[in-house]
Image 1 (cartoon, one colour):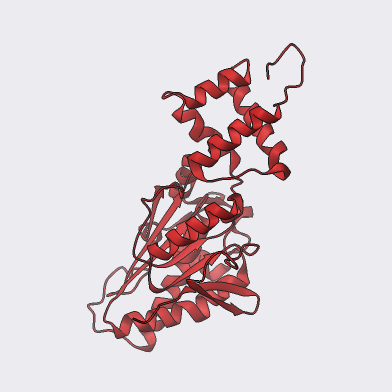
Image 2 (image 1 turned 135 degrees about the vertical axis):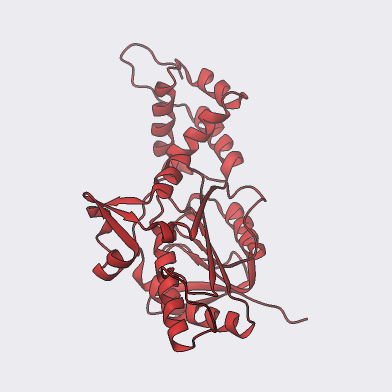
Length: 302
């Protein structure tokens, strides 16, 4: 493809195939025929942005060492960073009322007061901050019911002593990670956050809501490409919602296998509402309550 004066650029089938393959090798995202026009639109947008006059020049740039940055930029443009606080309420109810109390009880019996959650594909941060608020609430409630001997801490932290909560939040897009780290949200982004949560976990700064520093300290943001093997280990719970839909079946199988390895025994995996592990793995069993779904790691007895 080359772009003449006033010509509407279009990629040939072969050119599209080259980009598809490159993106797949880079991050596992697969663009089939149904999403070919979306891929074409994004490639042309980046091509113009780089001031390149032909697909061939752009493709050569992507393959080059200096072009690594542009490839990352293209991949970032291919993800739809749609997110919100308290997204998929039925699933979060299952997390809050069934998964968390059971996990907290198990940890308490072991005298292990550490909880580790990974939010994979965290976008602009609403998911990991939602999880931080829900876990902080659950731990406070649990501690009131069965207090642990501890030294009172002042000011009161969101997570009661002796518990330690670590939430790792990762994404393939640097720009959304920067926004997530900032943790500042406009009124329209806060529509699902009720008054009590706003009061306890946010500071009102002008017209915006800033996540309190003590809550931000529970979440660690980092760049991760799910295609790689270097992924966070020893998680009690993994949330990876609306990410697998970008992958083909082979890549989905590999990803589920990785998640299995990244989870502690009896750990939980939450995927998107329209996503399923059905036919992908027999290493998880499904939990289903009131339209909310999660998957628990199956432990094979020796």
